[in-house]
Image (cartoon, protein in one colour):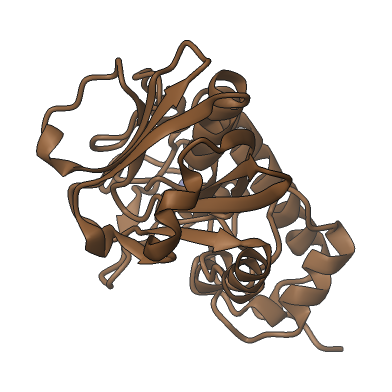
Length: 281
Ligand SMILES: [Zn+2]
C-alpha cells in the first residue's frame, strides 16, 4: 500500500490540477530520498509540468523546458504519498521533497514518506526508458487476455507471488492480490501453470474488475493513505478477505477467512479457494 489504484488516483488528481504549472522551486529535505539524478535538480526550476502518468505503483511527472523533456518518478513504496500543500499531514517532518508551483491553484506537490521505502528519481528520456524497462512488467489494466494466459502457463510460480512480481505484472500489492484471488476463487499458493484456462480467464477478469472498481472508489485507505487532495479512498469497505482473519467467508460457505503465515500474509477462504491440480487426460 499504496498500490496501483492509489497511484492511479494520485496521478489523475495531479494531471487535473498541476499540468501547465511552472516550477518556481524544488526543495529537498533529505538528499538520500532522491535515488538518481539529484545533480540535475536545477534544470527543473522554471520547467513546465506537461503530463502525469502512472506506471505500476509509481507516478511519473513530465517536465518541459526549452523543448527538452525530463521526468520525475515518484515511487510510493509502502507509505509514500504525493500531497498538495493544503493537505495536512500528521507528521510534517516526513515531507522529503517539495515542488513549488506557479500558474495553478495548487501551489505545491509534496512527497511525504515516513518509512522511506520509496524513492524519487530524476531522469532524462533515455534514463526514464531504462528505468521503465527495468522495473515495470505488464500493466494489469492493459495486458490482453491472451498475454495473461500465456504468462500463467509459462511459469510454476505461485499465483499470488506472480501477481505481485512487479517486473512481470506491475502495480498489484498484497491487498489487491488477496482480493483478486478470493473473487477468482483461486488459492494464493496455486501454481500458475496448473490453473486451467477457464479459471485463468476468471482471474484476468477479476484483476481488471477489482482494480477498476478500486480506482473509481478512490483506492483503499489502509493505515495512512489518502489522495493528494486529502480525500480517503473508500474501497476498503469492499474488501472481502484482506485483514479479515477469523471472519465468516463472504460467500457464506460456512468457513472462516484464514491468514497464512509468511512475509506477506495471504488471506483466503480454505473452502472457496481450494488448491487444484489440472487433470491431464
Ligand atoms: Zn468460502
